[in-house]
Image 1: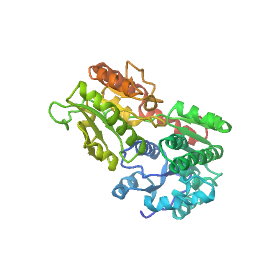
Image 2 (image 1 turned 45 degrees about the vertical axis):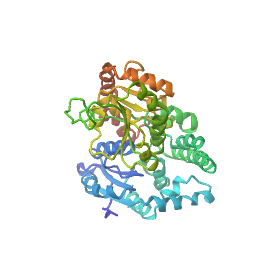
Image 3 (image 1 turned 90 degrees about the vertical axis):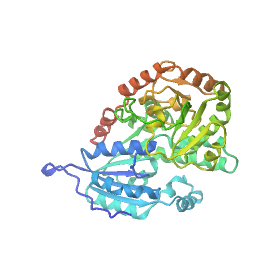
Image 4 (image 1 turned 120 degrees about the vertical axis):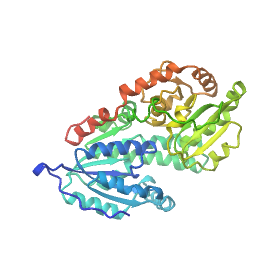
Amino acid sequence: MSVPAACAHDDDRGGERPGLLFLAHRIPYPPDKGDKIRAWHLLRHLARRYRVHLGAFVDDPADWRHADTLASVCAATHLVDLRPRRARLRALHGLWRGEALTLPYYRHAGLQAWVDRCLADGTRRVLAYSSAMARFVMHARGARRVMDFVDIDSDKWRQYAPTKRWPMSWLYRREGEKLLAWERAVAAEFDASLFVSAAEADDFRRLAPESAHKVGYFHNGVDAEYFSPAHALANPYGAGEEVVAFTGMMDYWPNVDAVTWFAEQVLPRLRRQRPALRFAIVGGRPGAEVLALARRDGVQVTGRVEDVRPYLAHARVVVAPLRIARGIQNKVLEGMAMARPVVATSQALEGIGARVGEEVLLADTADDFVAAVSAAAGRDDLGAAARARVLRDFAWDDNLARVDTLLEGSIP
């Protein structure tokens, strides 16, 4: 665990920036997956205006090497080692306590003590990132508290339930119900709650009408200079290969489900039409189920890569066949920013607002994907239009500005 620095007093005397407590369920660096990308850009943005005191869990031992990067941005950090196996055992306490299993998973007395010291020292602004972190400041009614739910996590569990057999189907359904009750309690207690898109915010307003007046959103952004087709990037694929690419962390169940379904139901049909076509699954932590797909003809599983951009830049088509999804998908935005033709499900396109047929192609069934991927391979105009959409609607600074307003006392 990093050595925590003392929290500074939250005032503006002498021109000093006010303090802000930022709590995250996962260390917000490196920005190599969806939740960490949003958290990192949010943290870096807030650090320009506030002296940020960061409390976060570290669930990947490799991420400890980035502690100094965060210390250089924050006034104080308190990072806590989270061992998933132990946390899962701890989560089972929620069964007989009648609470969502997510809450004991992230219970930590040391982090709670550090948060309490920060609050006692006078920190009066709080940004909690993900519903699990709200538990540490539910009692802090003297502070201005903003909740970034990002997505409706409870609905992800609800979507998981039908894909599993009993008893996991029952457990996931229970988690969806219990976690929704917690999300509603948090939204009622906090001064404002944010989501990743207008559609996600609207869905939550329907689920929690008592807090509808305090619910807003800000879009994820894309670093369009970094994710740009202007860069000269070496081709990571074999000569003559036509590649359909999927990017994402491969220990995340919706991603596993998506690539398995595509490899089994769509790819063989595409390869009958285009024998040179390959399906590249690009992302870290692939488990046994994903690694097994590499034994299929035409499937490549890369594992973790240092830079995802070459795999996007040299793909003929980028696909997002997600059947379980909430909020805005960074994988879709990054493919669009790289000016590649993107074929995605309606779930993966939610909140992006791209024009179907002009900026992206929509496919929800195997038949749809076969037709759309075949059509997209000859549509370079799709990529150019998609990048224009990203430049227009998904600049980080433009979207993050509303968070400043909320922390200073306004509501969405």
